[in-house]
Each structure stands twice: as C-alpha cells, then as structure tokens.
Image (cartoon, one colour):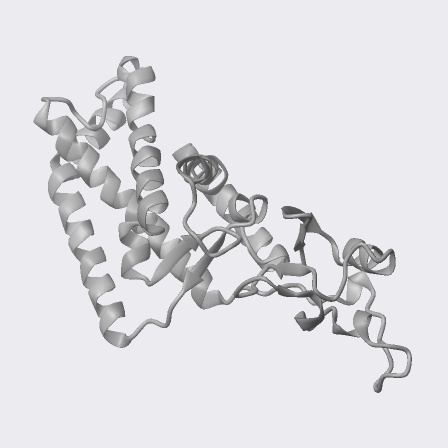
Length: 262
C-alpha cells in the first residue's frame, strides 16, 4: 500500500509502509501529520490511520505497540464488481465513439473501412483514436465521468477526491489507449487487458491510475440502472450494425477476394 503525507505544506509520496515508519522513528512524521493512502476517503492525522496507530502508542500504553512489517501490510483489493463495471464502461465509450466517427465520416463521403491498404494513412490513424482521447479528457476534467461511467455510477477523481486537470485527464486517456486498449492492433488489446487485470489484482489499480494516484469511485447500482445500461448497450450495438453493417460486409467480401487472388 502506498502512502502520501503533507510535509511543510507540500505533498510527498508515494511512500512504502516501511519508509513511512522510518520517518516516524526519526520524528519527521508526528501523530498529527496529515496522511492519505490508497482507498482512504480523505486526509487524516497519522494517529488516526489504522495501520499506523501502533507507532504512536506510549511505552506504558495497553496494548503494547505492535510492529507491522512492510510485507504484512494487506494489499488493497479491488472488487470484481468494480472491475467489470470499468470494463463495460470502457468498451461502451469505445463503441459509442466508433458510431459517432462512422456517422461523421459518412457525412463527408468517406468510408469507415478502407477498400485497400493504401488508404491506411496518418490521417486515418489519427482520427481512429485522437478525437476520442480529447473528448474523454474533456469529460473527465469537467465532470469526472464519461457516458459509460455515468451509466455505471463510476467517477474518476484525484488523490484529494477532486477532479483531474485537463493535462492529467489527457495523459490518463492516452495511457489507457496504449496500455489498456492496445491501440486496437491485432491481439494487443487482449495482452493489455491481461496486464491491466494483473495490476488491479496485485496493486489495487491499473497502471494509469496507480502511478499518478488517481482512483475510480463507485456507487451501488440498482436493478433499474443495470436495465438502463443493458438497453443502452443493446441500442448502441444496433446503431453500430445499422451504420457499419453494409460497409463491414463489403469490406469483408473485398478482403476475402484479395486473399484468394494469386
């Protein structure tokens, strides 16, 4: 578990448990030093943090101080409910963007699927993900949510529980596209998902939230809210099929013909 402290008015961290205890032994951290750790609701005095209470008991206190080694500190566990909701929210946003992108491209007389490899250029590469990163960054910075996160009662916040800066939200979205979505290149998304799952199970958060100290807050979902999300997802799939169905069929047919051509 990582810790952050307020030292001379400045935030310091992340610190490992043993590092924080060394500072307590050196009297550089007192029982009134403000401390925050992953999963905490807010900043608290060091003596009020359950994992540090034993460090501030006097010698004649009962029970006696219990020294907790760093390896004994429990790793924060993330619930499977939260993992699945984050997964569904991410892919909902992705498919929603694909529908909007296809609609805009068709409005300008462009095809979503190129008919030959020469049509894969820098412009197509950029529009495949850059606007999505910008849109998501604006939503996260302004509201802490995206459409998918809104439907699934999720909200992205910083260490203090506030909204991210625009730069922070943009870097987060870029990391997700590369490290979480694998840039949608062949099997890279599966590999990226597996690595993200490992970080969540071992460290309590994916790397794009773990490194800067961001977290995703969640509220309980009612049956009605789940029903709304399922209906919205079904409608999105219908819209995607309607917008891209004929073009996808033509693209697949052309690809098969090119593969069979000697």
